[in-house]
Length: 384
Ligand code: SIN
Ligand code: CO
Image 1 (cartoon, rainbow, N blue to C red):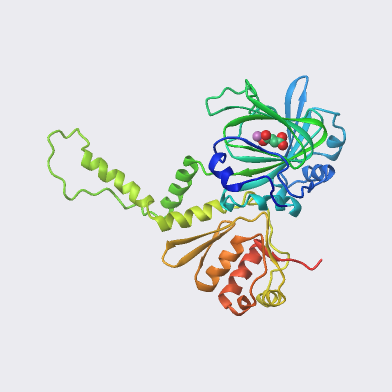
Image 2: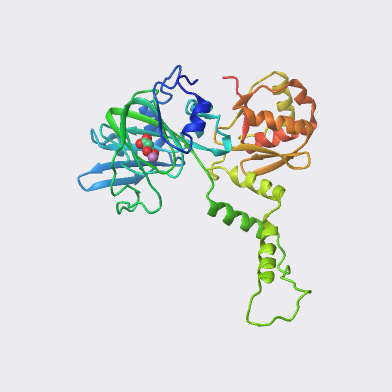
Protein backbone atom coordinates (compact mmCIF):
# COMPACT_ATOMS: atom_id res chain seq x y z
CA UNK A 1 0.00 0.00 0.00
CA UNK A 2 1.58 3.30 -1.06
CA UNK A 3 0.70 6.83 -0.12
CA UNK A 4 -0.66 9.40 -2.48
CA UNK A 5 -1.84 12.88 -1.47
CA UNK A 6 0.65 12.80 1.40
CA UNK A 7 3.83 14.85 1.67
CA UNK A 8 5.99 13.20 4.35
CA UNK A 9 8.42 16.10 4.87
CA UNK A 10 5.63 18.63 5.16
CA UNK A 11 3.76 16.33 7.53
CA UNK A 12 6.77 15.95 9.85
CA UNK A 13 7.55 19.65 9.81
CA UNK A 14 4.01 21.00 10.29
CA UNK A 15 1.89 18.30 11.94
CA UNK A 16 3.83 15.48 13.68
CA UNK A 17 3.40 15.96 17.45
CA UNK A 18 1.92 19.41 16.73
CA UNK A 19 -1.55 19.40 15.21
CA UNK A 20 -4.13 17.07 13.69
CA UNK A 21 -4.29 16.43 9.96
CA UNK A 22 -7.01 14.92 7.78
CA UNK A 23 -5.62 13.14 4.72
CA UNK A 24 -8.34 12.25 2.23
CA UNK A 25 -7.84 9.25 -0.02
CA UNK A 26 -4.33 8.75 1.33
CA UNK A 27 -3.50 5.47 -0.42
CA UNK A 28 -3.01 4.80 -4.09
CA UNK A 29 -4.74 1.44 -3.88
CA UNK A 30 -6.72 1.15 -0.65
CA UNK A 31 -8.34 -2.17 0.15
CA UNK A 32 -9.61 -3.21 3.56
CA UNK A 33 -7.16 -5.86 4.84
CA UNK A 34 -9.46 -7.62 7.32
CA UNK A 35 -13.14 -8.66 7.28
CA UNK A 36 -15.42 -7.71 10.18
CA UNK A 37 -16.02 -11.37 11.12
CA UNK A 38 -12.27 -12.07 11.10
CA UNK A 39 -11.79 -9.27 13.64
CA UNK A 40 -14.63 -10.65 15.75
CA UNK A 41 -12.87 -14.04 15.65
CA UNK A 42 -9.65 -12.51 16.99
CA UNK A 43 -11.58 -10.94 19.90
CA UNK A 44 -12.58 -14.46 20.99
CA UNK A 45 -8.96 -15.63 21.28
CA UNK A 46 -7.40 -16.07 24.69
CA UNK A 47 -3.99 -14.55 23.99
CA UNK A 48 -5.26 -11.48 22.14
CA UNK A 49 -6.13 -8.28 24.00
CA UNK A 50 -9.63 -7.01 23.18
CA UNK A 51 -12.45 -4.88 24.59
CA UNK A 52 -16.11 -4.37 23.85
CA UNK A 53 -17.56 -0.94 24.61
CA UNK A 54 -21.33 -0.46 24.61
CA UNK A 55 -23.33 2.69 25.19
CA UNK A 56 -26.51 1.75 27.02
CA UNK A 57 -29.25 3.63 28.89
CA UNK A 58 -27.17 2.99 32.01
CA UNK A 59 -24.12 4.70 30.46
CA UNK A 60 -20.83 3.46 28.99
CA UNK A 61 -19.96 -0.19 29.65
CA UNK A 62 -16.70 -1.97 28.97
CA UNK A 63 -16.11 -5.71 28.79
CA UNK A 64 -12.60 -7.08 28.60
CA UNK A 65 -11.92 -9.90 26.12
CA UNK A 66 -11.64 -12.70 25.26
CA UNK A 67 -15.31 -12.49 24.31
CA UNK A 68 -17.64 -15.43 23.90
CA UNK A 69 -18.94 -16.02 20.36
CA UNK A 70 -22.52 -15.93 21.69
CA UNK A 71 -21.86 -12.51 23.24
CA UNK A 72 -20.78 -11.12 19.88
CA UNK A 73 -23.66 -12.82 18.05
CA UNK A 74 -26.17 -11.30 20.48
CA UNK A 75 -25.07 -7.66 20.10
CA UNK A 76 -27.64 -4.99 19.31
CA UNK A 77 -27.95 -3.10 16.01
CA UNK A 78 -26.14 0.00 17.23
CA UNK A 79 -24.02 1.75 19.87
CA UNK A 80 -21.22 -0.77 20.37
CA UNK A 81 -17.64 -1.09 19.27
CA UNK A 82 -15.17 -3.93 19.49
CA UNK A 83 -11.46 -3.09 19.81
CA UNK A 84 -8.63 -5.53 19.23
CA UNK A 85 -5.00 -4.64 20.04
CA UNK A 86 -1.89 -5.56 18.10
CA UNK A 87 -3.73 -7.14 15.18
CA UNK A 88 -0.56 -6.58 13.14
CA UNK A 89 1.13 -9.28 15.24
CA UNK A 90 -1.34 -11.87 13.98
CA UNK A 91 -2.48 -10.75 10.53
CA UNK A 92 0.29 -10.04 7.97
CA UNK A 93 -2.03 -7.93 5.79
CA UNK A 94 -2.64 -5.63 8.78
CA UNK A 95 1.11 -5.55 9.57
CA UNK A 96 1.63 -4.32 5.98
CA UNK A 97 -0.35 -1.19 6.89
CA UNK A 98 2.63 0.00 8.96
CA UNK A 99 5.05 0.01 6.00
CA UNK A 100 4.04 3.45 4.62
CA UNK A 101 4.54 4.95 8.10
CA UNK A 102 8.15 3.78 8.41
CA UNK A 103 9.34 7.33 7.81
CA UNK A 104 8.95 7.36 11.60
CA UNK A 105 11.59 5.14 13.26
CA UNK A 106 10.53 1.60 14.12
CA UNK A 107 11.38 2.08 17.79
CA UNK A 108 8.57 4.67 18.03
CA UNK A 109 5.95 2.33 16.53
CA UNK A 110 3.64 0.48 18.90
CA UNK A 111 0.99 -1.58 17.15
CA UNK A 112 -2.13 -1.52 14.99
CA UNK A 113 -5.37 -1.60 16.94
CA UNK A 114 -8.46 -2.40 14.91
CA UNK A 115 -12.00 -1.46 15.82
CA UNK A 116 -15.31 -2.68 14.46
CA UNK A 117 -18.37 -0.60 15.28
CA UNK A 118 -22.10 -0.86 14.73
CA UNK A 119 -24.01 2.29 13.75
CA UNK A 120 -23.38 5.06 16.33
CA UNK A 121 -20.69 2.96 18.02
CA UNK A 122 -17.53 4.54 19.42
CA UNK A 123 -15.34 4.70 22.48
CA UNK A 124 -16.54 8.17 23.51
CA UNK A 125 -14.69 11.50 23.69
CA UNK A 126 -11.17 11.03 25.10
CA UNK A 127 -7.53 11.85 24.56
CA UNK A 128 -4.54 9.59 24.18
CA UNK A 129 -0.95 10.13 25.30
CA UNK A 130 0.45 8.89 22.03
CA UNK A 131 0.34 9.86 18.36
CA UNK A 132 -2.04 7.87 16.20
CA UNK A 133 -2.98 7.59 12.54
CA UNK A 134 -6.64 6.59 12.34
CA UNK A 135 -7.17 4.87 9.00
CA UNK A 136 -10.76 4.39 7.93
CA UNK A 137 -10.86 0.85 6.59
CA UNK A 138 -14.48 0.03 5.92
CA UNK A 139 -17.72 1.97 6.32
CA UNK A 140 -17.83 5.57 7.50
CA UNK A 141 -17.01 7.32 10.74
CA UNK A 142 -17.62 10.83 11.98
CA UNK A 143 -14.46 12.12 13.66
CA UNK A 144 -14.57 15.18 15.86
CA UNK A 145 -11.53 16.82 17.39
CA UNK A 146 -11.38 19.33 20.21
CA UNK A 147 -9.08 21.01 22.69
CA UNK A 148 -5.69 19.86 23.94
CA UNK A 149 -5.98 17.95 27.25
CA UNK A 150 -3.54 16.97 29.97
CA UNK A 151 -3.41 15.29 33.38
CA UNK A 152 -5.57 18.11 34.84
CA UNK A 153 -8.44 17.65 32.36
CA UNK A 154 -11.67 16.57 34.06
CA UNK A 155 -12.80 13.02 33.32
CA UNK A 156 -16.14 11.30 33.86
CA UNK A 157 -16.06 8.97 36.86
CA UNK A 158 -15.76 5.46 35.37
CA UNK A 159 -13.91 2.35 36.50
CA UNK A 160 -12.57 1.36 33.11
CA UNK A 161 -12.89 4.27 30.70
CA UNK A 162 -11.20 7.65 30.69
CA UNK A 163 -13.92 9.72 29.03
CA UNK A 164 -13.88 13.49 29.01
CA UNK A 165 -16.34 15.24 31.32
CA UNK A 166 -16.79 17.94 28.67
CA UNK A 167 -16.03 17.81 24.95
CA UNK A 168 -16.52 20.71 22.54
CA UNK A 169 -15.67 19.72 18.95
CA UNK A 170 -13.76 22.37 17.06
CA UNK A 171 -13.72 20.47 13.74
CA UNK A 172 -15.36 17.37 12.34
CA UNK A 173 -15.30 15.23 9.22
CA UNK A 174 -16.90 12.00 7.99
CA UNK A 175 -14.08 9.65 6.98
CA UNK A 176 -14.50 7.25 4.06
CA UNK A 177 -12.40 4.11 3.38
CA UNK A 178 -8.77 5.08 2.70
CA UNK A 179 -8.97 8.42 4.53
CA UNK A 180 -6.60 9.02 7.47
CA UNK A 181 -6.89 11.30 10.46
CA UNK A 182 -3.62 11.95 12.31
CA UNK A 183 -4.14 12.90 15.97
CA UNK A 184 -1.16 14.09 18.04
CA UNK A 185 -0.84 13.30 21.77
CA UNK A 186 -3.29 15.11 24.04
CA UNK A 187 -5.78 16.27 21.40
CA UNK A 188 -9.34 15.29 22.41
CA UNK A 189 -11.20 13.28 19.79
CA UNK A 190 -14.41 11.35 19.31
CA UNK A 191 -15.20 8.84 16.57
CA UNK A 192 -18.78 7.76 15.93
CA UNK A 193 -19.70 5.14 13.33
CA UNK A 194 -22.07 6.31 10.61
CA UNK A 195 -23.79 3.09 9.58
CA UNK A 196 -22.80 -0.48 10.33
CA UNK A 197 -19.53 -2.37 9.70
CA UNK A 198 -17.33 0.61 10.48
CA UNK A 199 -13.70 -0.49 10.75
CA UNK A 200 -10.88 1.79 11.85
CA UNK A 201 -7.19 0.87 11.94
CA UNK A 202 -5.18 2.83 14.52
CA UNK A 203 -1.47 2.85 13.73
CA UNK A 204 -0.26 3.76 17.19
CA UNK A 205 3.08 5.08 18.39
CA UNK A 206 4.89 4.88 21.69
CA UNK A 207 7.25 7.17 23.53
CA UNK A 208 8.96 6.40 26.83
CA UNK A 209 7.96 8.58 29.75
CA UNK A 210 10.60 10.32 31.85
CA UNK A 211 9.47 8.30 34.85
CA UNK A 212 9.80 5.00 32.95
CA UNK A 213 13.26 5.91 31.68
CA UNK A 214 14.50 6.97 35.06
CA UNK A 215 12.83 4.20 37.06
CA UNK A 216 13.91 1.34 34.80
CA UNK A 217 17.40 2.67 34.08
CA UNK A 218 18.11 3.30 37.75
CA UNK A 219 16.99 -0.26 38.55
CA UNK A 220 19.36 -1.58 35.90
CA UNK A 221 22.26 0.56 37.12
CA UNK A 222 21.62 -0.49 40.74
CA UNK A 223 22.08 -4.13 39.75
CA UNK A 224 25.70 -3.32 38.88
CA UNK A 225 26.60 -1.20 41.91
CA UNK A 226 28.37 -2.67 44.91
CA UNK A 227 26.98 -1.78 48.37
CA UNK A 228 30.38 -0.53 49.57
CA UNK A 229 30.60 2.45 47.22
CA UNK A 230 30.20 5.16 49.86
CA UNK A 231 30.55 8.89 49.91
CA UNK A 232 34.14 9.78 50.76
CA UNK A 233 35.61 13.05 52.00
CA UNK A 234 39.34 12.60 52.72
CA UNK A 235 39.76 16.33 52.05
CA UNK A 236 37.35 17.36 54.84
CA UNK A 237 38.20 20.60 56.66
CA UNK A 238 36.60 22.02 59.80
CA UNK A 239 33.46 24.07 59.06
CA UNK A 240 31.99 27.07 60.94
CA UNK A 241 28.58 25.55 61.60
CA UNK A 242 28.53 21.76 61.96
CA UNK A 243 24.79 21.88 61.27
CA UNK A 244 25.21 22.94 57.64
CA UNK A 245 25.35 20.59 54.65
CA UNK A 246 27.78 22.57 52.51
CA UNK A 247 27.33 23.11 48.76
CA UNK A 248 30.61 21.23 48.05
CA UNK A 249 29.27 18.15 49.85
CA UNK A 250 25.95 18.36 48.01
CA UNK A 251 27.66 18.74 44.65
CA UNK A 252 29.84 15.70 45.39
CA UNK A 253 26.76 13.67 46.43
CA UNK A 254 24.84 14.60 43.32
CA UNK A 255 27.88 13.89 41.15
CA UNK A 256 28.17 10.45 42.76
CA UNK A 257 24.69 9.64 41.48
CA UNK A 258 24.93 11.28 38.08
CA UNK A 259 28.24 9.67 37.14
CA UNK A 260 26.64 6.23 37.49
CA UNK A 261 23.93 7.25 35.02
CA UNK A 262 25.95 9.13 32.47
CA UNK A 263 27.90 6.53 30.49
CA UNK A 264 26.54 6.85 26.91
CA UNK A 265 27.42 3.27 25.89
CA UNK A 266 25.82 1.77 29.00
CA UNK A 267 22.72 3.86 28.41
CA UNK A 268 22.59 2.86 24.73
CA UNK A 269 22.80 -0.83 25.60
CA UNK A 270 20.18 -0.54 28.30
CA UNK A 271 17.77 1.60 26.24
CA UNK A 272 17.94 -0.61 23.17
CA UNK A 273 17.26 -3.68 25.29
CA UNK A 274 14.43 -2.01 27.23
CA UNK A 275 12.79 -0.54 24.14
CA UNK A 276 12.93 -3.81 22.20
CA UNK A 277 11.19 -5.82 24.90
CA UNK A 278 8.11 -7.31 23.21
CA UNK A 279 4.69 -5.82 23.90
CA UNK A 280 3.37 -9.25 24.86
CA UNK A 281 6.42 -10.98 26.38
CA UNK A 282 4.44 -14.13 27.22
CA UNK A 283 3.68 -14.88 23.57
CA UNK A 284 5.98 -17.65 22.39
CA UNK A 285 6.91 -17.21 18.71
CA UNK A 286 9.76 -19.73 18.68
CA UNK A 287 9.63 -22.31 15.86
CA UNK A 288 8.28 -25.72 16.84
CA UNK A 289 11.57 -27.30 15.77
CA UNK A 290 14.79 -25.32 16.25
CA UNK A 291 16.30 -24.25 12.95
CA UNK A 292 19.75 -25.64 12.10
CA UNK A 293 22.55 -23.56 10.52
CA UNK A 294 22.60 -25.84 7.42
CA UNK A 295 18.93 -25.07 6.73
CA UNK A 296 19.70 -21.37 6.89
CA UNK A 297 22.62 -21.68 4.50
CA UNK A 298 20.43 -23.61 2.07
CA UNK A 299 17.65 -20.99 2.27
CA UNK A 300 20.14 -18.16 1.65
CA UNK A 301 21.66 -19.98 -1.32
CA UNK A 302 18.15 -20.56 -2.72
CA UNK A 303 17.45 -16.81 -2.27
CA UNK A 304 14.39 -17.42 -0.09
CA UNK A 305 13.13 -14.11 1.41
CA UNK A 306 13.71 -13.68 5.13
CA UNK A 307 10.92 -11.87 7.00
CA UNK A 308 10.73 -10.26 10.39
CA UNK A 309 8.07 -11.48 12.74
CA UNK A 310 5.66 -8.50 12.89
CA UNK A 311 5.39 -9.07 16.66
CA UNK A 312 9.15 -8.72 17.07
CA UNK A 313 10.93 -5.54 17.99
CA UNK A 314 14.19 -5.10 16.15
CA UNK A 315 16.47 -2.06 16.22
CA UNK A 316 20.17 -1.24 16.21
CA UNK A 317 22.49 1.38 17.67
CA UNK A 318 25.79 2.09 15.92
CA UNK A 319 28.67 4.16 17.23
CA UNK A 320 27.85 4.09 20.94
CA UNK A 321 30.93 2.00 21.68
CA UNK A 322 33.97 1.66 19.40
CA UNK A 323 33.03 -0.15 16.20
CA UNK A 324 30.38 -2.34 17.84
CA UNK A 325 26.89 -2.28 16.40
CA UNK A 326 24.38 -3.31 19.03
CA UNK A 327 21.46 -5.24 17.57
CA UNK A 328 18.41 -5.45 19.80
CA UNK A 329 15.90 -8.20 19.17
CA UNK A 330 13.01 -8.66 21.57
CA UNK A 331 14.94 -7.61 24.65
CA UNK A 332 18.19 -9.36 23.73
CA UNK A 333 21.33 -7.43 22.70
CA UNK A 334 23.79 -8.88 20.16
CA UNK A 335 27.17 -7.18 19.69
CA UNK A 336 27.88 -7.14 15.97
CA UNK A 337 31.04 -6.35 13.97
CA UNK A 338 31.88 -6.33 10.27
CA UNK A 339 29.75 -8.92 8.49
CA UNK A 340 27.25 -9.31 11.31
CA UNK A 341 26.91 -5.53 11.62
CA UNK A 342 26.06 -5.30 7.91
CA UNK A 343 23.57 -8.14 8.32
CA UNK A 344 21.97 -6.44 11.33
CA UNK A 345 21.51 -3.23 9.34
CA UNK A 346 19.81 -5.18 6.52
CA UNK A 347 17.48 -6.99 8.91
CA UNK A 348 16.45 -3.71 10.54
CA UNK A 349 15.98 -1.82 7.28
CA UNK A 350 13.06 -3.76 5.80
CA UNK A 351 10.24 -6.08 6.81
CA UNK A 352 11.57 -8.67 4.39
CA UNK A 353 14.96 -9.13 2.76
CA UNK A 354 16.68 -11.49 0.32
CA UNK A 355 20.19 -11.94 1.70
CA UNK A 356 23.29 -11.92 -0.42
CA UNK A 357 24.58 -15.48 -0.96
CA UNK A 358 27.90 -14.38 0.58
CA UNK A 359 26.15 -14.30 3.96
CA UNK A 360 25.93 -18.12 3.81
CA UNK A 361 29.74 -18.21 3.92
CA UNK A 362 30.07 -16.24 7.15
CA UNK A 363 30.03 -18.40 10.29
CA UNK A 364 29.32 -15.35 12.48
CA UNK A 365 26.39 -14.25 10.30
CA UNK A 366 24.90 -17.75 10.26
CA UNK A 367 25.28 -17.94 14.03
CA UNK A 368 23.41 -14.65 14.47
CA UNK A 369 20.67 -15.69 12.05
CA UNK A 370 20.29 -19.04 13.81
CA UNK A 371 19.82 -17.33 17.16
CA UNK A 372 17.32 -14.83 15.76
CA UNK A 373 15.32 -17.57 13.98
CA UNK A 374 15.24 -19.72 17.09
CA UNK A 375 14.16 -16.76 19.18
CA UNK A 376 11.22 -16.34 16.77
CA UNK A 377 12.27 -12.85 15.55
CA UNK A 378 12.80 -13.76 11.90
CA UNK A 379 11.92 -16.66 9.62
CA UNK A 380 12.54 -17.67 6.05
CA UNK A 381 9.27 -17.49 4.12
CA UNK A 382 7.67 -20.88 3.71
CA UNK A 383 6.97 -22.03 0.17
CA UNK A 384 3.16 -22.05 0.33
C1 SIN B 1 -11.49 3.66 17.32
O1 SIN B 1 -12.61 3.84 17.80
O2 SIN B 1 -11.27 2.87 16.41
C2 SIN B 1 -10.30 4.44 17.75
C3 SIN B 1 -10.34 4.80 19.14
C4 SIN B 1 -9.47 5.99 19.46
O3 SIN B 1 -9.88 7.09 19.30
O4 SIN B 1 -8.36 5.85 19.96
CO1 CO C 1 -8.10 7.73 20.76
